[in-house]
Length: 479
Ligand SMILES: [Zn+2]
Image (cartoon, rainbow, N blue to C red):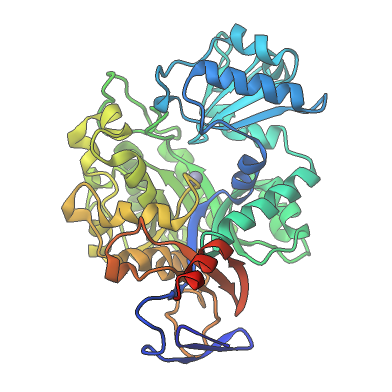
């Protein structure tokens, strides 16, 4: 078949005619790769109560009351995407008012960042006596057990299957054909059972390395492919738990949640299993610590670093830059949509940490200037590269802005590279697999992302998503 000057046979590109496509589009690019998402969580969010539209504590209580009344008895009420910072008055409801609308149905409400959860009394009664991060008087959980709630209360297999199908639809309709995803062990088995078009590489979240060893030694093919062992050094800026090098505007501060020894142990454990370590580090103190631990390991046991260290987020990287980061060991996965959503003038980051400290977060250009591998991922906030790319090309610090081609590269070939999708990390040329995204406009010509729509997505030459509405309008207008 031919499309915009491309010929595709048996799933591969067999001819490219750069002049064959009209300048009016569609504009064909290698498919997007989301190097950092939470595939099963994205799906679970889509099939759970969505709180992103509520604008107050009362609005949230109303939504919970309606959902609780509609759910079959015995099920846990899961609510997602709470973002109190966008409410008229950003104050959580009291535990008693939460109980009043949910009664004896166990209920948990997860903040958009995933690092904070609100539970009612019925849910609290199901939690272990020792629940780190839980404040029993308010029902608020920060970090600790908030990060483990799905592992403690795994959704049933049918719910998971629906979640995967939903997440795949979200990805394909955003032009994404492969993802680096972070998954607890219980979803890996379920993912194996669900046939999907999208390619997955999983960073595994496991408390107990023995559990992980069992997965690795299982005689079945490990699907999805394993990307590495995920570990957390801090939380999020929105939840006030990122280990910033300075203080938050309310005077509070946060420390890394691990010691140097614990981090060293995690890196060694991963490396003994032949795996990279994927380190969530947002604040300067967390990044400083990772840099320090890696420096020591390089001197004492360099083999522990050979599978590689991928740094997730690295938002406050410049405080420790250039540090002793090493491009042969470290790669970076960063989130331009965080910039777009929270780092712009008067945004959340400015409120949380002041304008001076927030401006220099997410230094994309510095990472590339240091010749590090950089891939973009959405972290699902929201999912979809087109929502995020403006954060890279309109960064509030002009020095850190990327040009359009470089930004696109980080969300396609660069992201594929840091996830190990080596074929997708190559440019479009004859013989390459035809995983493609069809955009409505060339961003190079219009110079912005707002008007760019995704028209279609191809996996190995097969159209797996087509925006009928946009295509109809286009053919109606004679394009
Ligand atoms: Zn994440």
